[in-house]
Length: 197
Image 1 (tube, rainbow, N blue to C red):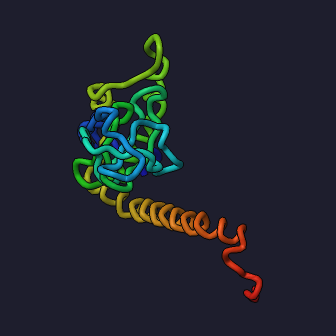
Image 2 (image 1 turned 30 degrees about the vertical axis):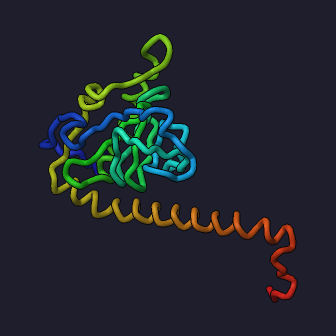
């Protein structure tokens, strides 16, 4: 829709024209826990999955927050890895959260995916490791289609993204069931010998 059918009246712009960017800030280490107390906390790309991050840490003193469905971007080596939040969460200094200004979160996600080559430049800069700051992210050049085209894209793609999320959540539920049943089956605590398969 936006590559093969690019319209000449679309404007050159920057990422800040379509999105608000929040850079992460890590809480103090003594506020972290793995017991589920407080707010979900993602430090960086270590928690990233194929689309959604995996809960590992929580904090009782969140500093910077990402909203549900925000794009999470790794802003420290390597720059540009992406995930999507499936709940409000605290983000550490290794992440930035990208939120649509106009409610077109799927459009923002795939726009940022398309910036991969530009973001790779930041991985080769610096003496120790790559990083990107808020100003550089805001100024990333993009083509900004008219709002009707963006809205049309969103009506097609947002339901697909919702299906991906629903499938992911179902997989997570099934994994919990498997992990609770398997030890009981292996130990013989659950007897399935009478079940007719």
